[in-house]
Length: 116
Image 1 (cartoon, rainbow, N blue to C red):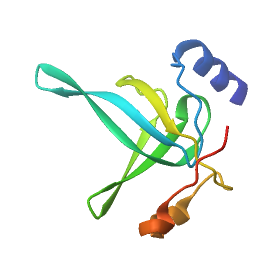
Image 2 (cartoon, rainbow, N blue to C red):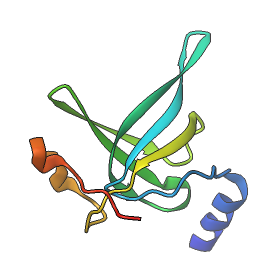
Image 3 (tube, rainbow, N blue to C red):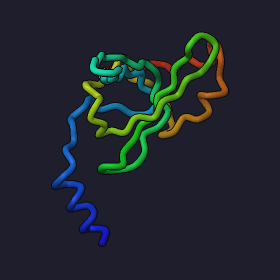
């Protein structure tokens, strides 16, 4: 049964190819917003907190600070309204899910950049 579900997902769901990113990276997601008959492109730039799931159900969570309030947004990987994903910085973290990042403020909330 599980192989049948995987087969249907591989055949019928179109996967977009985006830049490779992981938890700790700072990325910008460009996505379309429909307002009535008009559409416009909006972006959301923040730190990737987690990536989870596989195949059609893969999602990623981004956190940014809007003033003094933390804003998190969950994006499905194969959302049709996502136009592109840009990786701004590669972060150096030791975990796949950095939920401790929510509690950090100020200089402690900085993530060191990976050396290339």
